[in-house]
Image 1 (cartoon, rainbow, N blue to C red):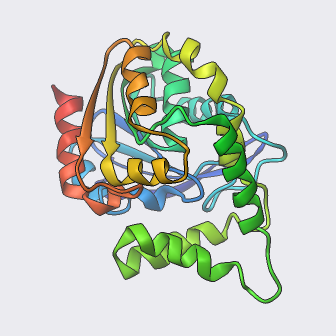
Image 2 (image 1 turned 120 degrees about the vertical axis):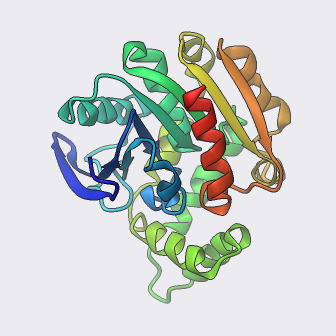
Length: 271
């Protein structure tokens, strides 16, 4: 496999899924947060692709993939990933996810255990359900297309607040715009999934690394969505799990600290 990413689409019953593939070595599936796309891994991929076959996916409803024909569930997203790796003749892979991508990675590891080597879950939380419901309503409102464009600046400022990089702010903002005018698919999927997590994730057999970005956790606490105890609960639920705190890491830690996170990920996968 070439050490550059090739762009491809997979046809599914629910629409076309855009993905990029390249590199050499054991496969590593990359799953992004919502409302972004595989651009979340843009800066880390050059460090990973030397040692791994990278499959970076735009989940349905995001990026260059189609919008799903209905409200999507975490199980739906997981099935899409299995369909994709089946099409690539990948029998077993490791999976890395951030926020929404972490829940999908956990679902795959719980329900398709023979297909998963190891998982890396970034910024995964057992959210406060009521606060997440409020957050979902805010997302839905923010994604409504306004004639005067008044919704746009607040979203730009949000991405600017953690990206600390004009290029990444611009990139994240453009990717989010692809989700505007549609339901917040990713948030809705997590809303409906929370209650099932404790029982499901007990079934995970894959060795699991949880990366907890300290600034992301502060933001989750500020909104009342989560706290340290909510994140650490996963250590009690997932049998073979460890947690590493990433000091100064934000919701966008993967592009924020690409070389550092790549080293952590590769050390975990290879040892």
